[in-house]
Image (tube, rainbow, N blue to C red; front, side):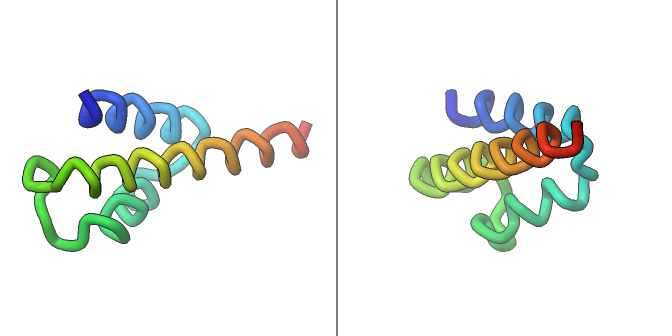
Length: 66
């Protein structure tokens, strides 16, 4: 379930203009060298929280630009 949510959050970041390398950096800052399917539920939740944080930040920036 968390994996699907994280994929959707990554797609939202792409829609907001993030590049793939930026999204990967967000994930690897938490996951390190582990493969995504080897992450603990705790790490997956940390990634989810960080992705949501980035989406909120990007959304605020988009509002300011308008």
